[in-house]
Length: 268
Ligand SMILES: C[S@@+](CC[C@H](N)C(=O)[O-])C[C@H]1O[C@@H](n2cnc3c(N)ncnc32)[C@H](O)[C@@H]1O
Image (tube, rainbow, N blue to C red; front, side, top):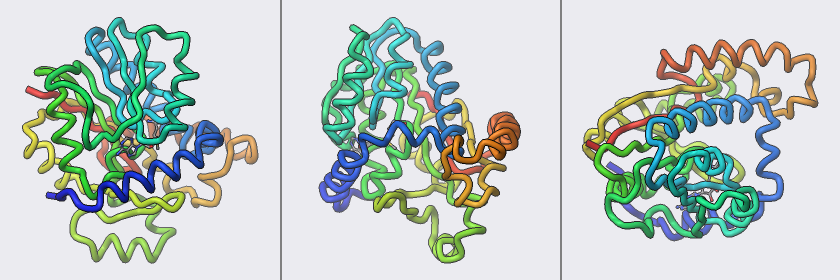
């Protein structure tokens, strides 16, 4: 199990990178890869919102509030928390017409909420992976603030992702690392997980698995130079991508491979 080390340094680096990226952050969804992710996020948030339609919901690492505003369609109160002040400012703006939404700037390794207060907790977009020195701490905090029979839904990157075929150095690192290795994005590291690691983590925290949703399975066979382009820059490829994405959305309900997984669990 991963113990807590260097978390303040990791947290302040992550905050600085997202502060600097905030103005362009929402445009990521225009890239093929992220279009697919956000489609799955939307579907998962809707399911969580209808499964736990009232009470408090927390959006951890809420970023610019893309999932927070969807959660706001529930009857209960929603609180988004993020370590980046600029991301929180953007999220506040997005949700300003929603009276049931509030935001806090803070660190998810020390959640400023009471034990057992939340019916639903989300953490989408590598929020856990970014805190690779404190995975166990984050899980413990999520379990602490979750009510009995509450749902926790989080996204984590898979270790064995098809795009490793294009990344021989990283493939070697993955092969020589026990458990999940670290990937890099925009100068930040984030941790990947094997299914066994995840299963052990859920078991250690006494969580009951409800659903696993994989995303970007076949799409990861597309070379990164194309996959991370904006859709409008490659309109002819877009039609093909939509078909592959449709297939991935169906496969993701059955298979546990792909670039990332959304894991939904219940606290008994
Ligand atoms: C990839 S973004 C995802 C944002 C949003 N959930 C989405 O899907 O658009 C990851 C977010 O997690 C936040 N984050 C990472 N580590 C955090 C921590 N320890 N405490 C609070 N927020 C954190 C970052 O600041 C960033 O806004």
